Image 1 (cartoon, rainbow, N blue to C red):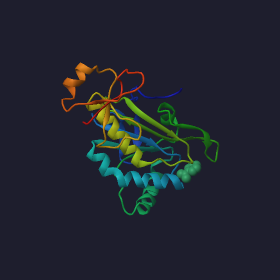
Image 2: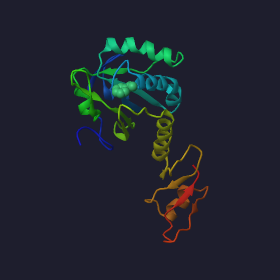
Image 3: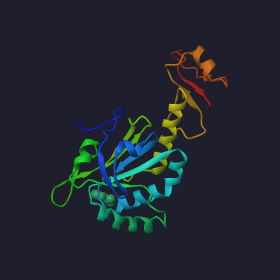
Image 4: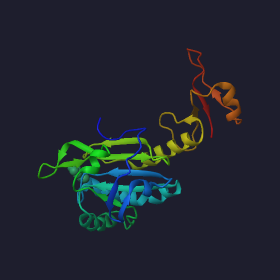
Length: 219
Ligand code: BEZ
């Protein structure tokens, strides 16, 4: 597969954005970052998505997560479109930078090209790609949605909470997990280690195999 995926370090590309030129690693610094693309400015689903990102910006900020958007349109187009996004989102300001990639170089390197969608002149367009980058500048999670399906920002927030929980404790989050619900202890942790690591205790689910691998705890 071309471009980056989970476990890869994001290349330190120099990008032009609505908030000036910078290198990606300088922007990430040692924070978590959500790097997300959209097919184009002045399109309906994208307007709703960027508006919702602006509305959720404080929630991401509370978790120490920076935002960075991208489409192939130029900076003048982004700046004009931001006025629509802010008006649609009820006045939430777009405080995060948006990368311009008119030459389609960045979307190729960041694995954001939509194989199906094409612009009016047959040019490549980005999909709705979203990489969550960890403080070590490596991709921790990626979404790849087609142009026709808007992303769910509650889900983006939920997976940030899951990633941060897993980074802090040796745990994983089970199906449909939500913050404050129980987590499962990683298989790499044996029961003796689990007793030390989770003094609050843990419950082992009794399953036919009797292997004792499904252990819930609260962290
Ligand atoms: C949209 O944002 O609504 C959109 C963009 C490209 C193709 C289809 C939908």
